[in-house]
Image (cartoon, rainbow, N blue to C red; front, side, top):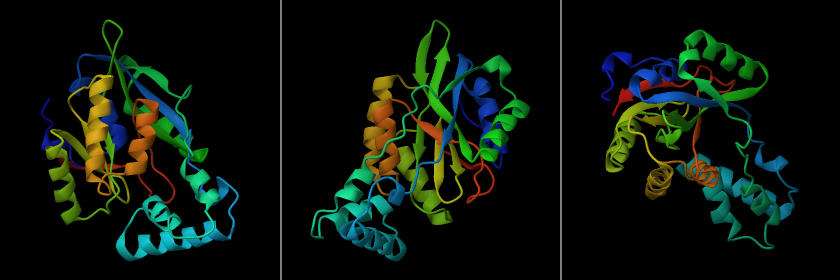
Amino acid sequence: MKLSPQIIGISALEFVCLLPSIFPEITSINIAVLPFAPLHNSRADMAGADMKVVRQAQDLREQVGIPFWDGAMIAASTVDPVPFGILTAAKFHQTLAGKPQNLNVNELNLEYITKISNEAQNGNNLLALTSVVNLHGQIIRHIPLLDFHCGFSPEATRVVAAVLRELNQRGALFSSGKSYHFYGVSLLCEEELRVFLGRALFFSPITDKTWIAHQMIENCCALRISGRKDYGRPPKLVAII
């Protein structure tokens, strides 16, 4: 389906309510209320070498924009002794198992989804849309979702759009607050989703490599559709690709 430019400016919550019109074949979607991932220093015990890695990773992020965990892995290979704490922290994974709520498209409306979003925020959680959708005949498909790492700017928007075209994707591009979220308009089977995510890794750190790793572990994707304290509003649609 071709998206209309007239919807540019809507929130992720409003976009979710458009999914039944974008994908008339779906019968239900899946949403999940999730806690925010803990900070690196609360994931494992940190010794002197670990803190040295953290400082170097933070410096790399501030000076050249390298993602924290990419910088941490670069720094980890240069310190002695081995920073076991930061390596343990790096492998932290928050599973989606048991958390998604199946929502029939007939129940989907902005008032209801906003209520769930507000409740999640008030509980210091986030509301996410997962890639999983159900079709007639108990068929499961996935919406192509992708998280980006590059900072939001007019130049970055053009590059992100070019990356998505290289991935043969069309859809809706959102400002997530600091970077971008993408929702494709062509449903994928699980194998196609895996290939899509694998190919998206070629464009890291424009794409968010750590986010992709978590999605590949889960065999599905999830993106935040609620607001958050440090970003403010829910993600906003900024471009049709």
